[in-house]
Length: 601
Image (cartoon, rainbow, N blue to C red; front, side, top):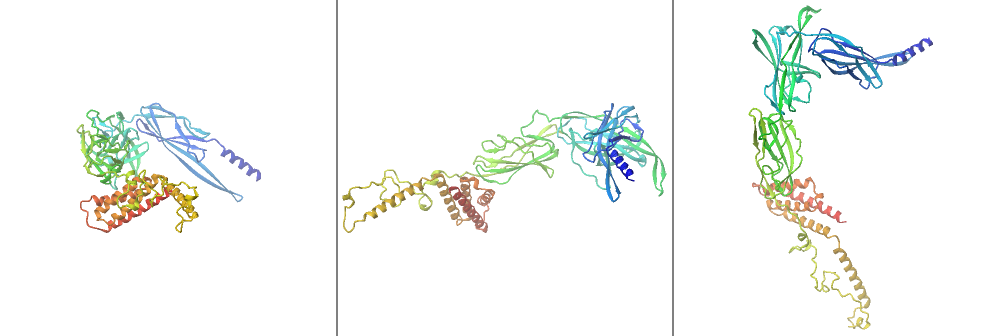
């Protein structure tokens, strides 16, 4: 028994270490020109991960395409003497499609699957391929424009499947293929409606799977025969210019020639026959939009019926402030390639009045429109509006450029108010508590001044003559110690005042200006609503210009709210909004004063 177990273990190790094996399974014959042949490469003996690399040898006169790689994992559990052993068996299936363009014996293989150092190779097969004669009862047609189209244009195309009336009841399955529907870097399809339940559909088979489109059915007569025509339409968008040979669309289907009853009495196909049809080869010529007579306002849009809108996030600004402009483009055409032209210049936004970013944004498609958002800075306080801006597109039906204009947007631009050094140092009449003491004029006698401790002009000489020190004796004589104490105190006070005056003058100006604007806001709260809010907005702008790093989005919002009331022609009487805006302005001024105090320490 022990020897038997050892032998089984060795045999299991030998099997586990066996090299991988590959086998090729070819679809059922017959094989026809233009009809894809299914090839399955089954690989055993590889690990579960990573996915192997499957490749085949190039077939002369044929196109080989790898469709998918999928693992098939089976698990076996054995129990020996109470010990459980689990064994996983992995089989990878690599699916290929081979389309042959000429009849004869075609050599297929070898196919190789590799995973790291492991590799397996299939044997070579030879399969006979024959030409399948087109059946007159079946047709397939690709409907493309005969004239050149343009890059970015939405080109309507159609695909039709004609089937003789009465034959549709015998069709078991069908496969329509066209190179135009294969994934490509040259074309893409615009999004279309999804098929609804119970609606007629048309299926197109591609290398990446089946595409199902809504379709219509109608009756037509051709060559003395009645047909049912199943038609589907799509919008094709060329991505680059060139002449594209698209080959021919083809269809192959199975016609049931004999039926039989199943166990439940139902009818099922007992014998089928392959039918085939092929369209003429097609070509599509794609051009760029013409450069001749192309306006500077052209942004890459091709189609018809475009419109252009511009909106601003606010219309009351201060010179130098940015505003956000939103540009919206709508129309009957592809929007993926639509961009914005350069609006800088005399025909758009003059450079001396508007500052634009150098790079235009890519934009995004929202609800069937292309939307762009650009910040613009107002540089001139004489600007009264965002002018009407042009936007041009190329109409392929008319063969010429068309232009639409946005509506102008009225602006109210206030001058930028900055605090100068003269505004901070000079003493305003009646404003004794908010300005620093002005310096006395040179040469003025300051010894008798009670509010100045400047050392200029002071006689601090020490008298050494005792007769002079005791002069003026009598009962009114000041004791000598008091004189020395007062002298030392005066010197210390003068030094302290001089140190105070020698501090950073910019920080002193900043604190003084902060106090002034805070008092201005306090006083504006008692003014009539319109006048008071205008004062508050102006004071907040001056505070922001002193220390821009202390201002955030709340400053901009509050200034915009005050401006909206100040410039509104229908501003009403006093309201609670006035008091609320004034309170918020006081809070911001207090925060600003705290920021200045921390900066001066």
